[in-house]
Length: 377
Image (cartoon, rainbow, N blue to C red; front, side, top):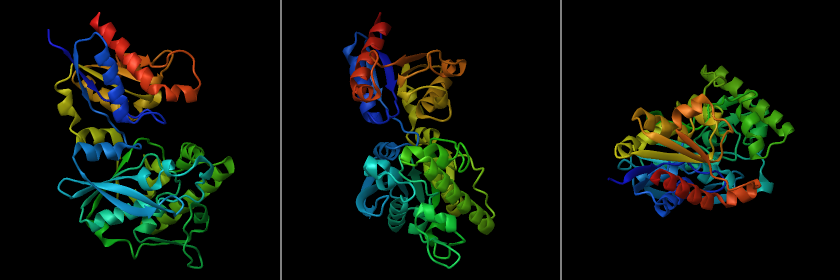
């Protein structure tokens, strides 16, 4: 009897393990079990922090390191990858403008900007690329992408013609000067990988939903909402493009909306783009079983998250799918059950969040081993 061929394709377990380490932990557990199996690790990303690195690795891209501004204008080293014979740059926003770059007590989305990511884009253009692919998860900013646009030559001006540079100052915005926008962008396709479908404004908008994650108090959220609304209104007056109802527009603190409006950026579902870009379907051809997972698997998973994208592809080929997560619903819905044959919570008894995060690797190994033993029975 042939060994069971298992494709291991988890997303990152946020604040605990990146996707690669999660895949290796699952593989270790399966190989410890009694199940006769062969494993292929295929960690995935849906636009969140780490997605760009996986794409560069899959394409054996060349990394280029650049000194850029962090969210508060301090110098830091970040990188982008060149693939497709140097014609495509893959940029991870978290590398230059990420929450991981600043201490928790420093979080301040009223001041933090995406300028450093724009510097990476400009450097990639200097390398002669004609495609820019941005993975925008993990940012520390809620600036509507204005920082990126400033790095690329756009000026945001008040009624006196003075330049505005912080998100909170955008409440004074009167005019957007695009006369010095880098001309090379007119012949460069920009694609943004989004893992959420939130719009720019409102109760489900970038300030209200993502602002608190980046340190915004309720008062800060109100100020950011006003800034983004002013930006959207002035942009509409000048371009005729209304970024407010744009699906995915609220991703990364509104970066998606701003770059769509001024750079004609294409906003795509992150996991679908990733799976196509990395030729995931080819890996599926040799699989008997697919295991995926991330920190939480619930109804939100079905709104374009990594494990859902993996499960969709697997189900299209009539493969069984196992979902592993730190948290799953007590009674999974019919919608979840349609894509995941088995959902397993990896926790080993009650634990506080800090402890659970620390034990993610061990819990994945143990759960995968138990799963393997059950399938071997």
